Image (cartoon, one colour):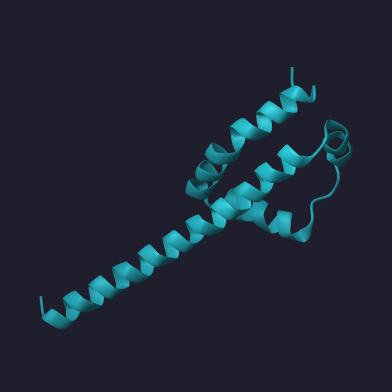
Length: 94
């Protein structure tokens, strides 16, 4: 393998790694926003929001998670416990 091909492969790997890291940072930011929404909302506010249409931003995030199983797993792993605990406190789940 020539030196230039090796350098090109290395640079390509760095670009892919950077894109994955950026996606992870965005996913973390969105997950933190969702967690904060649940933690700062009263039970009454959560009950009122239940069943309401999602904003375009939320719809875009949901579609992204539907199409990217790895991102979905990472997102759910991060938000599940705080959301389910709040829902339990509010009587939204048994």
